[in-house]
Image (cartoon, rainbow, N blue to C red; front, side, top):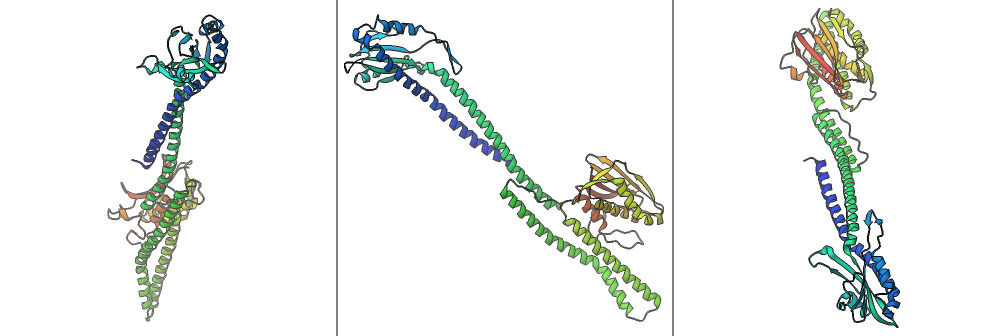
Length: 474
């Protein structure tokens, strides 16, 4: 399982559990909160009605007086109201009044007149000067039939002469509770969705930084040029990336020096031995012809040593670079013509024919000097192995986002044992009768190609050898 997916799943689990807990907690608080609010209003209503009915209660005119008529008209009212989107078409509050013994004297529903309510908590507590309220079920097994009862005392001459109770079914508040639950659920889902979106973005951001470090480590492991990834938004990963970059430079520097010292030592042994041997012979008395021959040998070997050192320094500078300094569009045809002009004396001396098939619109992106250098190394290698009156064919074709430059020659096939080593430093495979090269030309060409994000290969084809240079198109 990918690291980013693990982070996201862990974040999802935490957010989901937290969201479920908060939503469940608030949902459980909605119903009690609404009932508490309703109870507070019912207290005010009961006390107001108790004061309004006190004169009729004192005069014994509850059943047929103005109070009864007013409550009768109240019961028949239709508010035709919409509260938070919920329609209310009828009133649902019940009113009953008891005397000091708890006997019901008046009931807005007419169902309880004459009954003894003295043991109900609302009446019992109020008659004793305490706050009386209760919640009871009309049907014992059905919680949806619960009704809230709130009572207020009717006062005569400073004493409690009766009790007025207002009752409201909890079912009347259920639509508002359900609506609040729905809004809470939608809000919870929205918060959860936003949290998950943030978690996904955070996981992507974190894994992207780790992914850059992973790609960087893989490039270093494969020996490919790679910049230390920039991670400005994550200080810890940025410090780690910088440390990895410094570690790579130290390790590569150590390995680079060891490798080059071994290779250079091996490569310099032969010309140094030749120079020393020729110098020792020159100490003896020799005919002028022999002296000139040995002196020429020393000069040629010294020139070869100089060429090796120059090429080696050039390759070292290229391999130390991680990116191009000044990338620009480079037309391929003019670049090849520049290289061919420099190689014209060698090509003309061997009467080598050229076939140039480069589209006018062929352009690659990179540093022109380096691209010309890579082309020159490949063309020089082709010219060295092309027989007299042979031919070199140069073509370019667009393949995806790259240009593929092909340099074919009529030279002899490369031995199978040599193919895997052609791009090794100091490895040189020369035609018979020619001086050994530095063995760095193809290595330079490949290093330049990889620095541009391309590749360089050499292999056998029918009737010759083909070098291929792939560079990013512009």
